[in-house]
Image: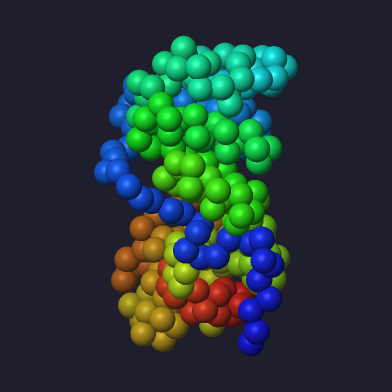
Length: 243
């Protein structure tokens, strides 16, 4: 089948790029700099706060800064593309920064400013492949494509019986789906899911109970929700089985 990928869509090798410098994830209490506090930047910053990081958020729009003040540890109004402004905010002392700006020129300038200040781990949001390549060239070690990734995910869920879908790499995926009716009332050991369908059942959810790890003795019931992992084609084929 011909590949009809849009020319601006990121390829599998460009979804996440890591290069030059060794790095370690931020420690609890460590400061992370987030430039641009729109939906993406504010969401990343709020989750980092929940994980125990101190987040300094910066945006040029005072209204955006005011809204983000309820979510982040510290917020500042300032020009995120100006290297001197970032220097005064202490950007040269942080190890991790996120550039969540949607405007291409501003995001490139902000990323370049962080690189000039020697920030060793820069994560940057890109809107298309060309934007991502520029971000890589000016210093981003990690480039993410949130709109593309979410669109891909929604299409897979919409196009099949799965409840959720997550691509782990070019060939491997995790899928949330309901127990196929042909497996209801049987244990995983009796079914032999891995040998029969070439997927692994990671966890199972019975009714309103929380997810639990799947074991060979787990008995699958009609209506149960499963998370399975395997090569993308096999995982999606399993999710298409009638439930």
